[in-house]
Image (cartoon, rainbow, N blue to C red):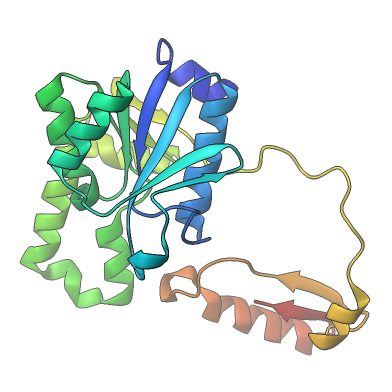
Length: 246
């Protein structure tokens, strides 16, 4: 919360535009957005998170509150919708998260209204696609993605990223280092009271009384889970008494 507050001085109201939210999913992207929103609230900033409706839209409420955070699910992800919402909520600034395709219309409206536009560049989605499809790296579409993402980052009044390596990449793309700030992934605190494992669940999962090594995350090729499996198999062959839980 202190980090968020120091980066967002003089801001009392903020609209936060995300690709998808914890109101409809629980992946790393959604969790990061939720924790940032909670930190903004904890810093005294009035924040509302806006996300496009996905999947079965008839089951998604327009307004949902999760842990005190207001989520607004929009049927129309367009400049007209953003103009109406900004006229109602009157934010001091707008913040949009990856990717450029999702954030570009937000930036256009912010520019039209002379509102500060901040971009939270959580990753390079074109590189994630290359991990799945190596041939994509040599395509014209890849170059177009890089150019569009870079142009949006350059147009932002402030750019937030996750670590110094990503910041260095943005600098190499022409984004001034002075307008880049880092909001890393991480835990606010380790829970003080960790409950004892559920013996029934351990038995159901075949874990018994063994030590457990757990991976929690997406099952994507670029996560390196094949290396994890190979390493665990080698350790198990060498006598490691443990179970691997994905």
